[in-house]
Length: 235
Image (cartoon, rainbow, N blue to C red; front, side, top):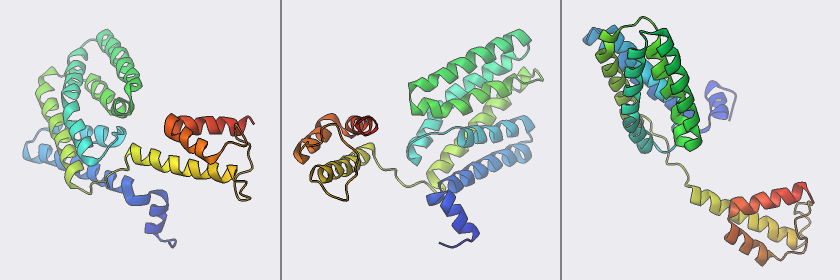
């Protein structure tokens, strides 16, 4: 592959997934910032447009293909607006802001238990409240802040669809099917006394290949593979 800059990047980032993502975040953030700052002459709006693109595009890890990520960004926009509004209004009182940070921080962090989607959104979402809580207390800038969030997240959602979209990921069903095939082949080779097969002792050494395949089909690759790994560690 060589030792040039491109070769080194490809070794660390196969498929240039991180590079494409950085390009989308950079373009969306810069376009929103400069448009709000120079065309509208709203520094606060420009700040929140840039922050929204960075928070949701870089700090958040939204799973799925480009179309699903774009839809997730649009669906999470009302939550981001609510967090900015709450942070702006609570910033006038130190104890209220502290209680809000503890409450929203705990709720958003605990929401990660709901699955990879909520877990990926949590890091970026909680920063909307934290940024709005920072001094100075300026409730008169609330509209500019909300518009800036809409601009930043809207541009990022558009960039997800149009700028270097990722390849469609392999489905979970396909991954499980490939894992089942490889596991069945390995167990079949082990039961046939293949000299090239692994030397670890499975749960039942003389288990026929048909039973192994049936076990994979009945239990699923994940459960059966876990049982196999457990038997290899504890023969």
